[in-house]
Length: 226
Image (cartoon, rainbow, N blue to C red; front, side, top):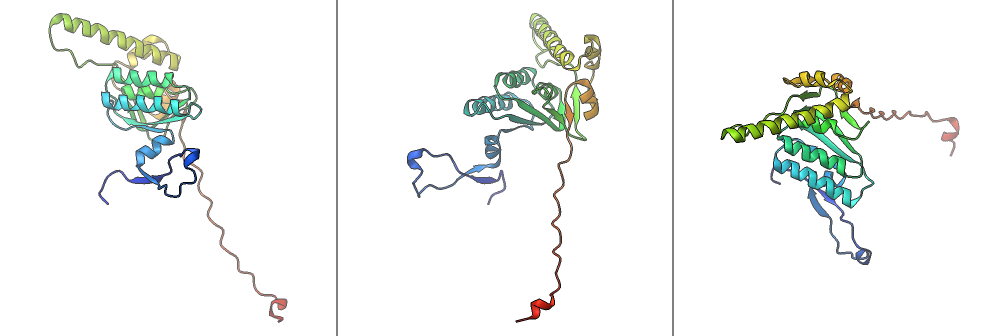
């Protein structure tokens, strides 16, 4: 088997008319496709237009498929485009079920914005994870002067919107959040919780109970009687 994304068997739902069809075969789907069907989404790359569109499309599809099942967005990303992050943030607020956001490694830049945008009480940063916040930057600062001025005004408006969002979540004064975002600010899970970016810190699951060794019962006198 070639090296790549592993595939898993998956039984596709069938219509009632085809339930007695014995020729049905299992469908093999790749690992991430199988996880998507379980409402597990992943932001493990830079936040590009393609990545944002994929996440938005999956969230909306899963919402249409079954709006009662909660979705889980696992994050390990250095961030990316501001507008791409806003698109994912808007999709989280648009879908009906709650969206859990979980930081496994790094949630930096717009990835931290998405992490903080998860459903209240359902935002988690695991131990040893890091959250980084900073001011948005523009990659279009080249060109004619009037274009640079317009682009600069847009960046300032976006920065104000993002700062106000963190102010709402952290309940800190605007000037303090504004100063914190002047430079890259790396936060531990405890600091991110105190800042209002996450609600709780992940912990290790319960250990599996070891099977008790079998105890041999010595034979009694009655066992020897034929």
